[in-house]
Length: 308
Image 1 (cartoon, rainbow, N blue to C red):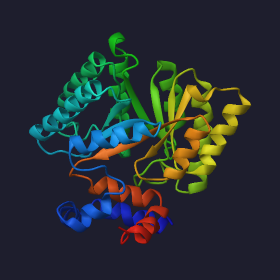
Image 2: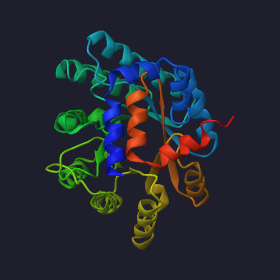
Image 3: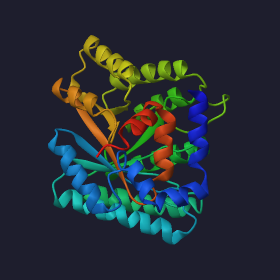
């Protein structure tokens, strides 16, 4: 499976294939299971549907690594619109964004300004902005910006971050984030990283995920555990039960279109579940990373592609 993971991560950077996929009916059909649609309205309708099934939502306008300031500001405008629409429609949803989409590689100052404006908007609309974690080149700068935003008293409770279990550094980062009172989403990690900074073996990543889950569950902060792996889910449930941690103190997070059976079972069992709902025309890198991180998704697509 490591070979398959490397294959799909490599494909995620293939520009000709990305251009073909994002502009073809075949590509859009393949991605539709995991991507809610191309427009804001598509995303909001998907959010309402998910909420109707008893779950919360995180909305993500897909896109990354912009090359012009206008692109970064256009991406931010979508998020401003989302925050207004979430409030207007009274949805139980927040938003999640990538710093490379907000122009961090063009100008850290530009990205800080854009994200600060979005967090200010989230405060006004009683909402929350999650800063996604990207590849290791962005890890420290992402942490630094989230720390800076969280240090502003008016922003506390309105900004959070994602941490990745496969990085060696993450335990120290998690402990620091807890001290700072910052909400986290824990995921395994979906980028290709060298063994010097990330666990190369799945078993080690799984072990790290479980250990980090326990640290997060022990904290008084409301965190999200993002996994479709029933072993990880069951480990968290068992630890919460052992420590008398109420299901209301944390949530499981899953991706739109993946493990719907597990999502519904968790709801029936009384746990909070939040679905990460991505949308937009720039879906290709996201789609390939989903295939890379969970090979079962490849077989699922092959099995269901020709079904009506």
